[in-house]
Amino acid sequence: MYLTKMLPIIGDDYRVHQEVRKHFERPQRVLFQQTDCCLMALSENSPAAGVGRTKEINVDELCQQGEQYMFNVRLNPAIRNKKTGKREAISPNKLQGWVANKLSSCGVTAEFKCLPEGVRKSVRGDSTISLNSVMVVGFLTVKDSALFKAALEHGIGHAKGFGFGLLNVFN
Picture 1 (cartoon, rainbow, N blue to C red):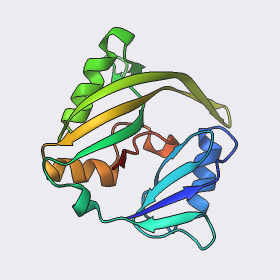
Picture 2: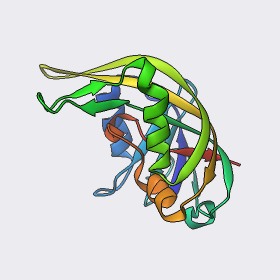
Picture 3: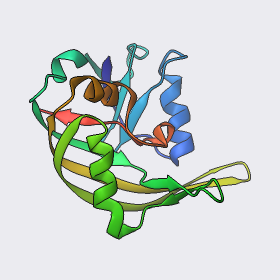
């Protein structure tokens, strides 16, 4: 896997997704997370030359049971309404539990804080998509190496194409 630090891209989530994809060979999935100061992208193959600072990471080394890391992940806390089929935002009083369940399903236990970022809107033609954004930060302990590896490689939750789900871990 390759982790690339790039300059931030200006625009809504559709535009950012399009610009990020230009730098990476298809058909691979690219997870990314943008902040005010940079954009981090995780990919199976290295990006085009000159895109940013790229380093190869060995995911297996990170996935040892008992390892502890600081982490952050941007999530879109939503569940599917069984009647309408649409995703609906999690209520604020259920957010901590929802995040804890998501992290547990990734093979970790964690102490974390949820930092609500509000609704992110993106327009494509006549369609507008609204995504509830929460940045989750904290400390995690790996309990299940296989589940944790899958979370690192494939991301967590929904809306990964819009900059959600990249699990950033730090030593």
